[in-house]
Image (cartoon, rainbow, N blue to C red; front, side):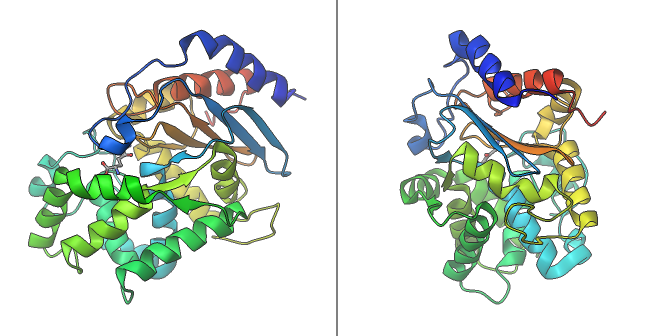
Length: 307
Ligand code: DON
């Protein structure tokens, strides 16, 4: 039986000299202020044991990792009908790329690139005021993490609202193809707030535990999705969770995962554990540089790769 705490401690020790590598996201001014010299890692096993190292209890902006939770809500609302609005193929393009949207008539490639996530948010908003939709997402994440202290960082949401030119372009483009039902400002209002959810590695690993445990959270007893749906969400994370870095992440780490420009990566070892790592410095495709290295070390030392 692997001593997980020893594995986490050894990863932290070996990576210590490299903490600060990469470049913090600066296209969202509020994220540019984050100190790059931070590193946290949390593993929660399906029997509920929590293993932490480094800054695992410091909240950070989960950014695109929120797309996993919004996707789960959207599938719960409309089921497989979701796939009329968004595809399931890797894009091979940057997370905020617009080129495929025109070539593919306003249907984004997958729910994890920005355009796809904006369409997913639009689906969750059906029948709700924007404020209710973001409330639903926040309640869901708190319920999953079993922690009422999860919050939204309004400064990050405001900062992105002021500078999210690309997302406005993507959303307007989709609206022109009638693939958004709600006004662009409303959909992006919800989207920017979901990206601004602030969580610690420990909270994030706990919130995602249902994806490691066939759709149910074994510690709270909450049944979240069916085993089949959990498998499918994991498949999407494996193929699309790191944008044009998805192949490389599968090659090096071999686990379904979802990254965010806040420097977080959430990953799943199916049947074993959920994992969250955070280190704000990003590589050139916008994924946490050290986070990916740490996950590669963790997968190698535990044998958790799905391959
Ligand atoms: O929409 C954006 O650009 C950000 N709120 C989220 C992007 C993101 O996290 C991409 N991840 N690597």
